[in-house]
Length: 252
Length: 219
Length: 57
Image (cartoon, rainbow over all chains, first blue to last red; front, side, top):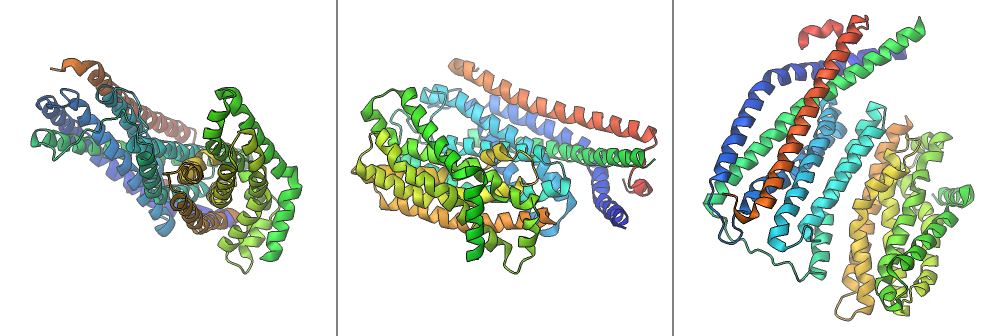
């Protein structure tokens, strides 16, 4: 009896992911092409932008640093929405989406930290400052790693789905608190050596390349996310096939 | 609920002497610091509140994985989940008992360790006060970590990774308030109230989230 | 074109390219490997749980 209901449930589960696989397979080639084109245009615009009078050519790093930082937050927002999808609607794809987004988000957060550090060295004279923004992004990176560690640790998919969703949401609720406390902490211990670069309204010469690069990075995220979701669905299919094979072998 | 609190407290103090392990770990952390930074008493007095906070924070992470594990193994989690009370309330009481069994000893030990670090009486008092108000937050967030890893055999390390980033605000405001009590221009009340606010916030968010996860883990 | 900051710009772009390319390659490799593993399992006669619904995909 129990086995029968479990089987019926899994067929229902599978209906949506199977349709999703079809859509993903159809969309991905075009999406990848648009992504590469947008990235190429963005890079061309970035390298043809004038030098900043204050920061010189180092402004080139901004065109990859700022989109990485945006994506680090956008990926987490996608994960938080997926967590809601898991908890409220129990949609099987929501958990797939959360799991697929985590490593990509962690990668962009890592890039934001590295490129920020490489930008900070010539501008501030040091690789790392315990600046409010950098510190918040570092904490976000640790949260990502915790979620990935948890996702890898729990075997049972339904338990993992709920656990990941809750942890993601609790983390999301905390981000403003962490941001606020770190801001406060930073004004308390303002390091004297850091000269904050006042950045008034950004010049259009930098704004347009930045926007195109941000769009390109968003498209990179979408492409990789779709690809990773496809992998996650295949991983689950593989897992259930292996279990079925083991059960048949055991039963025979 | 009173009965549950007493039961939990008794279990927590009996099983494996978790409180003693926590205090010993706290002692070890505090002892290691002077060997690392040198026996300069002025320096130790200056970093004292920070050392106490970091030590207490790490020590209170230690026993978290046992918050629900035993209940799940012996089946009492399922009974608690089905009992008349909301599960979140049960989790809240369990957290309080866990904190009373493991957090209070740390706070009681903190003044002694403060003397090791050559801290002034005011600084010690302020640190103890912030620890008393701030460490429950670790337990309440830890409840979420303990709930999501309850099915894992060795969840302790993952709990630490999940919980540490979330308790940074408590740490920041706790240490800041401790300094505020001794250093003149810095305020004490404002960060102290922030520590209290964060603890209250997690007192709601933690048990609710943990109960949500546990209800399904118990099924 | 890169000026005095080339020593920082080049690594920044190199690391970004490496991470994004690496992530893409890793994702593609896993996709291929999983498809292959599913195919071998199917050859061995392990039925897909939704074999009847194949038309959906």
